[in-house]
Image (cartoon, rainbow, N blue to C red):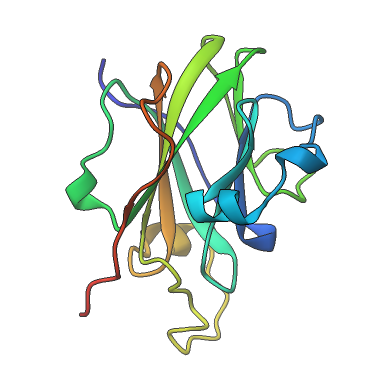
Length: 172
């Protein structure tokens, strides 16, 4: 299968979290929320509602969702957090924890998936670069020098979950 783009959007990652879920109306319970152990793994939630940590203070990220049959190249990304995701409804939604409506929604086959949250420029945003202008969606999409994400959605369950890659940002 060739990579299939399912959606792209600017996502405000409130509370430093991106969400991938099957049904946005069913939030996580207290026992599924963040704990020190889950923080160390980089994610919390349950298979139908996953929350993955982000870092940039402005919480304003470009996010791309792609359906794939191979994992991303671990050499090409600064951070990759892997989670098991389950779609019961045949939907996948990407959003913030405070959104009422998902920012990205796509139809997929119901079942189990591995989601690789691949990120570049962890912790870098306009604030850290000393910029004050508000970016349009087109401008933020083109900016590969600030924190951004590509979510690789792959059929099947992962062999392991958590931060698979977490390296410092290269010095320019």
